[in-house]
Length: 149
Image (cartoon, rainbow, N blue to C red):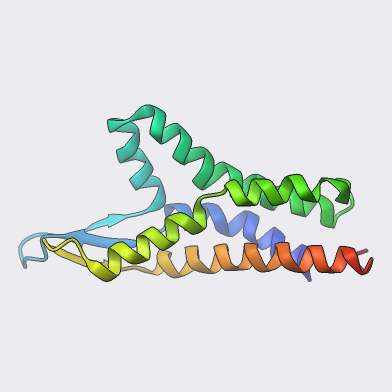
């Protein structure tokens, strides 16, 4: 079951990165709200600060995805479970959960100008992060009990 869930994350993470997390704008009837995704936020950052964008891209996209791929390789016995501590560190470096918390704070407080609406991508992104955390925990537990095939 962990294998299937982890493989699903390999597909769902990229969808969540491009899915609209929120719609933001002035909220006036004549103005359309702009959809904001993880990728569109990173694109804006690349225009203003390349070095920060490089760091955030690694920690928000590559680190969680590499961790997910690594866990998948462990599940299929293509990677030694002795590398789980490395995957654990990679998971700690992943900023997806920190990004999510910051996003929730921003949404709850609002900007004060304009309007912010949550979109379906926020729920998908949240589910991917929570599922990744659960898969990591369950993988560690099953490997300690030696029941992972």
